[in-house]
Image 1 (cartoon, one colour):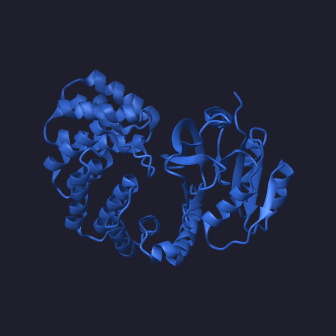
Image 2 (cartoon, helix red, strand yellow):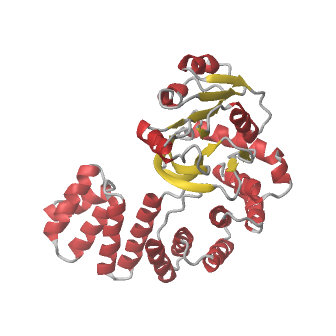
Image 3 (cartoon, rainbow, N blue to C red):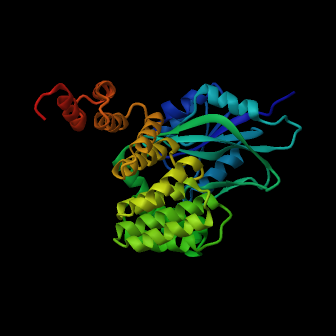
Length: 393
């Protein structure tokens, strides 16, 4: 059974530092690489050519989708994998994508795989491989999205792409300010398109411009969209805006509306529980957090990190149960937190404190020993360890 050819598409500008980590490793794996340069001055074009890529110039017009579509037009392979210059896919992941391609004479399909965003570890699913076919193209000025005919199948593939371009705070802010300028001028934003409103609000949130973000997120939350994942995130961000602006009542109302609309949505229940606890409503917060853990906290549509959110959710639930006197429930919650993040010392310290209250000194000593191995200068762990040894507190 003959498999179709698979190429790589990339758009770049001044990426000479990143190309050895992103483009070079895939050159021996793909059938071709197409690089569209939008105005590099650092030797990126020559470097890409030295790897064997076909390089094309495309004058920058403030539209990432336009540049991405130009690269697609220049592709000669049956299927295309799009990568950014700050992306890397390991050989095993690339081969998994190749193996998942339909036969040459079979119906075409779009392949999705995970993107891991560094350093925070957020995980989102993206349409990364697609056929070179009429009706398949990118839309969106910033954070462009692949669009394709509805009849085309979409398949999930167990492959992960690493994205490190926002790891440096200064670079992340520079990109955020650039993206904001483009979004504010984009026709989609001016026309009230949900995706553009959402991305503009999200970008303003990342830049901590909460008063400005609120208006865009309110409009996004009131817009029509089939993407319930991004709509839910818009409501969560709107709640965060209200919280930062000091209006806890509106922050809670936004999250309660989300919970009413999507009661089985774990991240929404988590953010509601966290807000309730922060406003002194611990008795109401506990059931929301417990429900969130049971429902699950992953939403790969907008990049929620299930490990991080689950750890925080279980840890906060443990604190609430401990404060209410439910030590057995608190211990279960802290052990769940430990399962989500074994290298974090906090659950062990909390469990050691519960063990001390219950008189289980051997267990407490063992937990504290491991916590101090992980974090030798952890203040509370050292304080409890001194108490156990009979030294001064």
